[in-house]
Image (tube, rainbow, N blue to C red; front, top):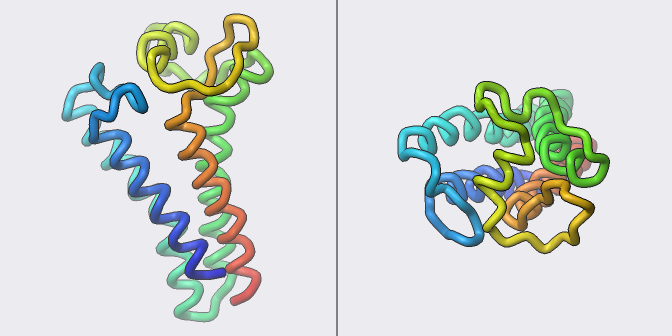
Length: 156
């Protein structure tokens, strides 16, 4: 389980970096962000997203499972944040207060401007913003990474 957990964590980190730095429109939409903004996003998020891999690897090397569990918790918190940001507006019509911090727009406005023309496979629920395919894949990777990291930690 350890190799799978590690691979999923690192796949999520790599996927996020590629989606943030590479223009793959209409799969993603990075055209509205400057190169500096994109690099800053990766510089901030990649270390946080990679931390569970480091903790899991150290846990395996030292036979200290609590470090692996800490990595699983970090991964779970990261995926929870993404799920709350993207899925609560779609499923429940509730936007997280931090969703647009410092942007000066509502989540619906921001979503329409930045993600509205990307690949979206979910059906409409009224006028609620829908998670796009790019983020659905990221969230699936992160959720799978969190679950397998818990399982890998239990087997250490």
